Amino acid sequence: MEIGTVAWISLVIMVTVFCPSSFALTLDGQALLEIKSSLNDTKNVLSNWQEFDESHCTWTGISCHPGDEQRVRSINLPYMQLGGIISPSIGKLSRLQRLAFHQNSLHGTIPNELTNCTELRALYLRGNFLQGGIPSNIGNLSYLNILDLSSNSLKGAIPSSIGRLSHLQILNFSTNFFSGEIPDIGILSTFDKSSFNGNLDLCGRQVQKPCRTSFGFPVVLPHAESDEAAVPTKRSSHYMKGLLIGAMATMGLALVIILSFLWTRLSSKKERAAKRYTEVKKQVDPEASTKLITFHGDLPYTSSEIIENLESLDEEHIVGSGGYGTVYRMVMNDCGTFAVKRIDRSCEGSDQVFERELEILGSIEHINLVNMRGYCRLPSSRLLIYDYLALGSLDDLLHENTQQTRLLNWSDRLQIALGSARGLAYLHHECSPAIVHRDIKSSNVLLDENMEPHISDFGLAKLLVDEEAHVTTVVAGTFGYLAPEYLQSGRATEKSDVYSFGVLLLELVTGKRPTDPSFGKRGLNVVGWVNALLRDKRLEDVVDKRCSDADAGTLEVVLELAARCTDGNADDRPSMNEVLQLLEQEVMSPCPSEFYESHSDH
View 1 (cartoon, rainbow, N blue to C red):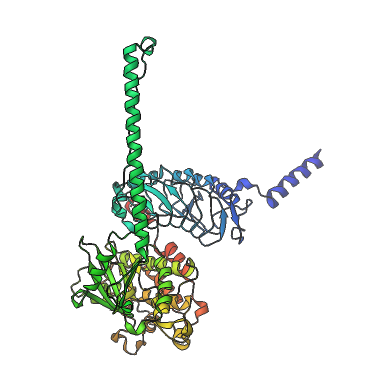
View 2: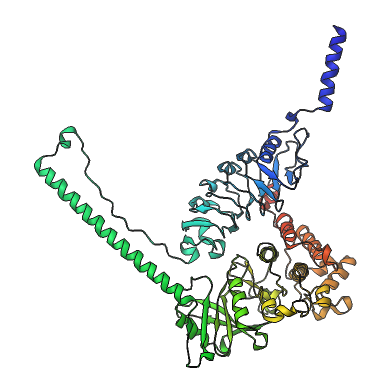
């Protein structure tokens, strides 16, 4: 018996040492394994999520709260080509503060159990194939300050409970199939059209689209309150018959009205569609015809109204001069305002190719790209119509703001960097074929009243300058922003855009133009100047003196990212998706309140 007992104890020890139980994982670890089982891991990025591990806090994409409880704080798994669904087990991670599954291939619905994660600060689910609606009780996530569900197949109404999310700073529902009226309550009333672009069936003040109530004539028949009342007398029978005839007449009238309304609406839609590509002859000479094309079909003006305002533009309406022509401010009779770019005659090419390419550019909609509304060919010029952005360009605010009417603090600059990265990543990775901008610079980053950046002039460099036969030989762009290999070969790639974006980051940090005269012998441009100062450990001289609130942590990340973007070897630069991922994860921290909470306890 003693030998048997010893053997049994030895076996237990061996099993314990060499085959640790899955129960070594905490409840959070087991929940993560359940989440993994619902995912299709095509790249095997979750290979180190093992059930026999002692801790899940070192798994790919997982970070935990400090302490011994090993509670999951964040799941960061963007751009991992993950398929499958989001498991309802996500709701078991009650201390989760950040969930980033964006730019994967997830399908299914957003599980209602997600709203059990009441400490959640940031939810990134954009760029998947999610369906269904938003959980109605999402308003329970009271700490949420970033909610990005864009570029999915979500549908249904926008829950009014979102209005309770008082900490919400970033909201992006664009490019889905949401419908109905956007609740104009609480925090939802502070977001504008840019948060809802691409949802054609949404209406409300935020998208500047009135909601139409449907016709309805409810027929209410009296109900029997007792058996006696249920046996109709001759008089009540006549009453019921009359009431029924009246109800049927009312319903018939309602049907006629509805059919008339639908017929009128259908006719007006056909007329608008017919007018969309109509040429308006202004003179007898066919050569001098005027043509107007609108791209989104939501301009509340007739062709003649738009053309009349375009023809009246003169020097007093000029607000700037771009690389491809002059920019005007056009104000319609109802005070609707647009930016109009008059194309330089030297940039013009074939009308047929030009208009075909413009239709592609006009179809692109993104919260961080300037919305192109239309194109007009006048006898003397060609004009592009854009949304007008109130604060003008980043270049104006950084370098021409002599009255200091609006200072750009560090938070503003980080928001501009992040939004610009989103717009450029969309052009590179979500447009087919990919669009290389070729002229990323601060004057092509326009700002709305909420300091949200919108990249302009995308696609125009290839369209207006290069022409198909000269793609690799003509350099378009602005000195100081151009990548070395682009200057040498004239061949623009996504990586040359990344270089220009790196220069833009340095411009945001330093407050200086890329070729500021103050650089002197420190370097020909801002890249060389910053590198020289950092070698001398003079970080304080790098940062714009007007930006005193810059914190060392995010500043270090931005400078390191800018250095990678401006690497002399194009192959060593990150892609814009990688740039965006780093900015979202490292710079735009979703947990600012945690810092203040931890300090307020002392």
